[in-house]
Amino acid sequence: MSAIDSAVSTAPVIATAGIRKSFGGVEVLKGVDLEARSGSVLALLGENGAGKSTLVKIIAGDYRPSAGSVVIDGEAHHVLTPIESRAAGIAMIAQEFNDAPTLTVAENICLGRLPQKRGVVQWREMNLLAQEILESLEAEIDPKANVSSLAVGERQIVEIARALSSEARVLILDEPTAALSQHEADVLFEQVRRMRDQGKAIIYITHRLDEVFELSDRVQVLRDGDVALVADTHAVDRSQLVAAMVGRYDIVTGRPNDAAGDRGEVALRWREASSHGRFSDISLEVCRGEVVALYGKLGSGALEVGRSAFGLEPIHSGEIEVAGERVELSSPVDAVIRGIGFLSEDRKVGGAFASRPVGENVAVASWPQLATRGLLTSDTEQKAFERWYDRLSIRSKGRASQPMEELSGGNQQKVLVARWLERGAEALVLLEPTRGVDVGARADLYKVLRELAAEGAAILIVTSDHEEVVAVADRAYVAAKGRITTELPGEDITMSLLLTLAGG
Ligand code: ADP
Ligand code: MG
Image 1: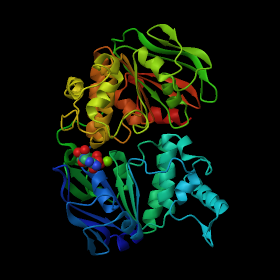
Image 2: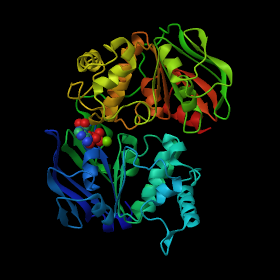
Image 3: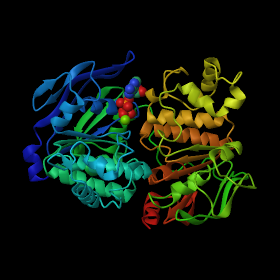
Image 4: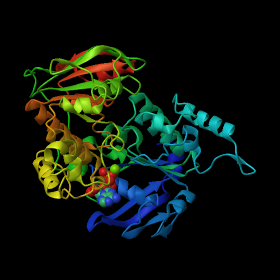
């Protein structure tokens, strides 16, 4: 801690006192106290579903607590509206996107406080302002571009730029690095430290323990809606945090060795495939019985290669083979027919029907097989859901009728995997499958993927998260600048090598 920090970090700017919150009779926060101090970074940790996002949404005024209050400068508010929260200087970068996709990047960044002169919006000034903030984040994003045209990681950067540009005293970041490359994350950390040094109070939610130690002064762990630990970061170690967080899980470390050696036939193959301006000369194969990672940061072309397996990115030269047969994949339907299952990097736009029942989410791709007289009945949906519920350790109320959006991110991912398995998919292409998913649910998901591979599925994970590659892959390809630069056999996969290779 610097001298400035120790001088100012004792006064809480924002606190919560005895916050309780129930959804549909289930209590997800059970009396939570939290303090955010000025000039200090509080890391808020906890496994998936622990209640972190719900707690900060209450601070942001998005949810009303069932009991307890948010204390701002010593004054308790039981009811806090989003406007009051913002007026009190609280800015939040939510876990799920809050941007307005039809607006431009600059409009999003300046939303709510567009530079005006006598009631006329100063567009030029706005674009310049946005440009400046984006440059401070070393982001090469056009302020005039439409947000809907951006990749997930870029949208995340726009969200961050918006929060940084606001004159907040309290900045809440809910898993902000999930979609960022290592370099982008480093730049963000710099900005967070700068804001801390300016005396702002920061609440930083993450599931990555490395980030806790790199960034935070204090750490608070939530478990099942209760506070499991509050400490100065320098006073705790990794294992204490893991124990407080997860209890029943083993943390994922090291590469699994179990499936090594029994690779089956090639299920998916790219042969010198190129897509104009996206990737070139990609040769890559995924066999039955293995989990292969295609690792690359934003802009490496890795996501586009993944999308080409689902007919979402055209191939201009070279070819794709499925089960040894050359195929034209010009739409998702072509891919589904050939037994390919796919998870997009953004669940919201990529196939999770958020407001629909989980059972429907499982059954929807198997509609031709499951429907009776053209309709999916709730009974059919329940049965489809039950086929996968235990198998994939889906953590929910166990009812097919529960809306998808009530499940945590990791469990929504499991439901989407179930959708393709129900359809009989033998090859799965998963883009950033644990984006925004924390350690417990990640461990679950990795275990499920390992098991599916052991039973003969071919799995390709496209990811920008080096920890993910180490945790789950039998083999890895590294992509940079639209090309595959290296293929790594399992025994060569290490964090430091991956980071070095992807640096490009
Ligand atoms: P975390 O951010 O720690 O992963 P959340 O705060 O998102 O956890 O969720 C805590 C619990 O509350 C989970 O069981 C989740 O399913 C539930 N939950 C969150 N938001 C809602 C909602 N809008 N409606 C119903 N249940 C919800
Ligand atoms: Mg969350």
